[in-house]
Image (cartoon, rainbow, N blue to C red; front, top):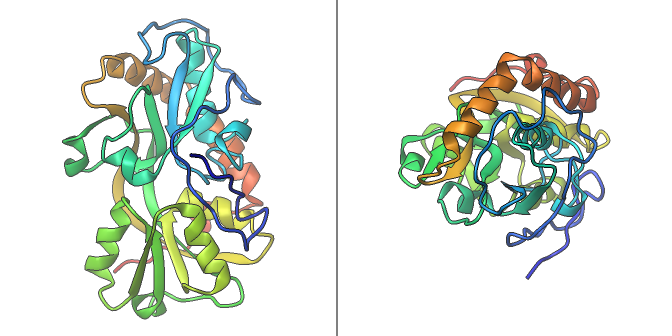
Length: 281
């Protein structure tokens, strides 16, 4: 059963319900294509298409309220360019909860892209792609109620189930009042409603949501995670070596940098990770 949802920037007060995996956006959307088509071949999970698991909302990464409406974004256009080099003109998105992705619970897909950190426990149930970014935890608050580095230690803090930030917060912010949400949308809705003082998730998601909030939210800090960000394959994926090569090629030829500039810089209203204060605990 699928529930409709809206992003925070569309209606801060709405509830974000996550859906079970469902077929969604097909084709290349608005993405610019780089390189030559069909330079690599692989047997995909569903013949004739490139199937990608995602976790919405992910402003800047997958721009759209639902999988069906995603037409642009850094990770989306990365997936499109992988499909392009595989000679596939059909990209199908499936939405899933983050914790199901890192627990290896999804089936019949080629790669999951959801700003996933590589960890040893996760390696036991999924395979990781070659890394394509370095992660950091971002902290967002309401613009009219900012919190500083010291204040975060005792704040009502929200983060997302299944992420490495849950354990990090438990270990490094023991006096914070931690709330763990099933999905990103519910977490940001709680922040807008004042049910939590701050939320913590990947800096890319934080910057996207803040830029989309029309001044209602603010990014106050970031915490280096020291972890690489990578895609997730089903355990034992035979497609891994081929897709890994394509990701490495996309990095080497400047495609990933171009997508980052287009979707993670230009669409954030001037917000850049390097401008966010670094907090250390």
